[in-house]
Image (cartoon, rainbow, N blue to C red; front, top):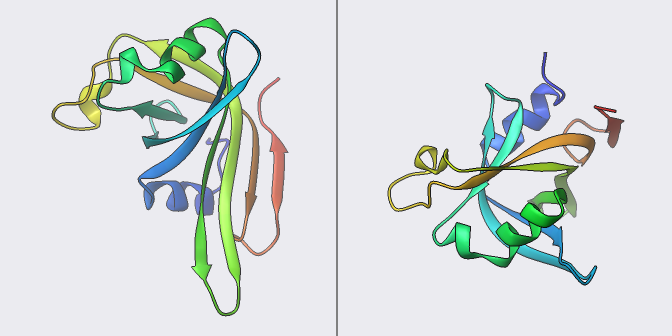
Length: 133
Protein backbone atom coordinates (compact mmCIF):
# COMPACT_ATOMS: atom_id res chain seq x y z
CA UNK A 1 0.00 0.00 0.00
CA UNK A 2 1.37 3.41 -0.98
CA UNK A 3 1.89 6.34 1.38
CA UNK A 4 0.58 8.50 -1.48
CA UNK A 5 -3.06 8.75 -2.53
CA UNK A 6 -4.10 7.71 -6.04
CA UNK A 7 -4.49 11.39 -6.99
CA UNK A 8 -1.01 12.25 -5.66
CA UNK A 9 0.58 9.42 -7.63
CA UNK A 10 -1.23 10.46 -10.82
CA UNK A 11 -0.08 14.05 -10.33
CA UNK A 12 3.55 13.04 -9.69
CA UNK A 13 3.54 10.77 -12.75
CA UNK A 14 2.25 13.64 -14.89
CA UNK A 15 5.04 16.04 -13.90
CA UNK A 16 8.74 16.05 -14.73
CA UNK A 17 10.16 19.04 -12.86
CA UNK A 18 10.21 19.72 -9.14
CA UNK A 19 12.34 21.59 -6.62
CA UNK A 20 14.53 20.01 -3.99
CA UNK A 21 15.64 21.81 -0.85
CA UNK A 22 18.74 20.62 0.96
CA UNK A 23 20.74 22.04 3.85
CA UNK A 24 24.41 22.92 3.41
CA UNK A 25 27.19 22.51 5.98
CA UNK A 26 26.68 26.07 7.24
CA UNK A 27 22.98 25.39 7.85
CA UNK A 28 21.88 27.49 4.88
CA UNK A 29 19.03 26.09 2.76
CA UNK A 30 19.57 25.43 -0.94
CA UNK A 31 16.58 24.98 -3.29
CA UNK A 32 16.94 24.10 -6.98
CA UNK A 33 14.87 22.63 -9.82
CA UNK A 34 15.45 18.93 -10.51
CA UNK A 35 14.22 16.09 -12.67
CA UNK A 36 12.48 13.32 -10.78
CA UNK A 37 10.33 10.25 -11.09
CA UNK A 38 7.90 8.51 -8.80
CA UNK A 39 9.31 5.04 -8.09
CA UNK A 40 6.28 2.79 -7.58
CA UNK A 41 8.39 -0.21 -6.57
CA UNK A 42 9.96 1.68 -3.67
CA UNK A 43 7.11 4.20 -3.11
CA UNK A 44 9.70 6.98 -3.22
CA UNK A 45 10.74 10.00 -5.25
CA UNK A 46 13.94 9.37 -7.19
CA UNK A 47 15.97 12.45 -8.12
CA UNK A 48 18.83 12.56 -10.59
CA UNK A 49 20.28 14.49 -13.47
CA UNK A 50 23.19 15.41 -15.67
CA UNK A 51 26.28 16.19 -13.56
CA UNK A 52 24.21 15.21 -10.53
CA UNK A 53 27.02 13.56 -8.53
CA UNK A 54 29.10 16.76 -8.70
CA UNK A 55 26.30 19.06 -7.57
CA UNK A 56 25.86 20.94 -4.30
CA UNK A 57 22.51 19.22 -3.69
CA UNK A 58 24.20 15.83 -3.95
CA UNK A 59 26.97 16.80 -1.51
CA UNK A 60 24.40 18.35 0.83
CA UNK A 61 22.29 15.16 0.87
CA UNK A 62 25.37 13.07 1.59
CA UNK A 63 26.15 15.20 4.66
CA UNK A 64 22.56 15.82 5.81
CA UNK A 65 19.89 13.57 4.31
CA UNK A 66 16.91 15.66 5.48
CA UNK A 67 15.28 17.20 2.39
CA UNK A 68 12.06 18.76 1.16
CA UNK A 69 10.72 18.29 -2.36
CA UNK A 70 7.94 20.31 -4.04
CA UNK A 71 6.05 19.93 -7.30
CA UNK A 72 3.38 22.50 -8.10
CA UNK A 73 1.59 24.18 -10.97
CA UNK A 74 -1.62 25.96 -11.86
CA UNK A 75 -4.56 23.76 -12.84
CA UNK A 76 -6.15 26.96 -14.15
CA UNK A 77 -5.46 30.68 -14.05
CA UNK A 78 -9.07 31.85 -14.12
CA UNK A 79 -10.26 30.95 -11.62
CA UNK A 80 -6.92 30.71 -9.82
CA UNK A 81 -6.40 27.02 -8.96
CA UNK A 82 -2.94 26.10 -7.70
CA UNK A 83 -2.14 22.47 -7.02
CA UNK A 84 0.89 20.64 -5.77
CA UNK A 85 2.58 18.35 -3.34
CA UNK A 86 5.32 18.84 -0.76
CA UNK A 87 7.25 15.82 0.44
CA UNK A 88 9.58 16.04 3.43
CA UNK A 89 11.80 13.11 4.05
CA UNK A 90 15.18 11.48 4.06
CA UNK A 91 17.37 11.21 0.96
CA UNK A 92 19.13 7.91 0.52
CA UNK A 93 22.19 8.53 -1.68
CA UNK A 94 22.64 5.71 -4.19
CA UNK A 95 25.50 4.89 -6.56
CA UNK A 96 23.13 3.66 -9.29
CA UNK A 97 19.62 4.17 -10.61
CA UNK A 98 20.14 7.14 -12.90
CA UNK A 99 19.69 4.97 -15.98
CA UNK A 100 15.93 4.97 -15.25
CA UNK A 101 15.91 8.70 -16.11
CA UNK A 102 17.37 8.28 -19.57
CA UNK A 103 20.55 8.40 -21.58
CA UNK A 104 23.30 10.68 -20.33
CA UNK A 105 22.09 10.94 -16.74
CA UNK A 106 24.60 10.31 -13.96
CA UNK A 107 24.24 6.84 -12.44
CA UNK A 108 24.09 8.38 -8.94
CA UNK A 109 20.70 9.46 -7.59
CA UNK A 110 19.05 10.05 -4.34
CA UNK A 111 15.85 8.41 -3.29
CA UNK A 112 13.55 10.44 -1.06
CA UNK A 113 11.70 8.35 1.48
CA UNK A 114 8.66 10.37 2.57
CA UNK A 115 8.10 11.24 6.21
CA UNK A 116 5.51 13.96 5.67
CA UNK A 117 3.25 14.67 2.67
CA UNK A 118 1.19 17.80 2.12
CA UNK A 119 -0.88 18.15 -1.05
CA UNK A 120 -3.37 20.75 -2.27
CA UNK A 121 -5.68 21.14 -5.24
CA UNK A 122 -5.53 17.46 -6.17
CA UNK A 123 -8.54 15.95 -4.42
CA UNK A 124 -10.61 18.90 -3.33
CA UNK A 125 -9.35 19.36 0.21
CA UNK A 126 -5.80 19.86 1.38
CA UNK A 127 -4.17 16.67 2.66
CA UNK A 128 -1.50 16.62 5.31
CA UNK A 129 -0.12 13.34 6.62
CA UNK A 130 2.83 12.04 8.58
CA UNK A 131 3.53 8.78 6.83
CA UNK A 132 6.54 7.26 8.57
CA UNK A 133 7.93 7.69 12.09
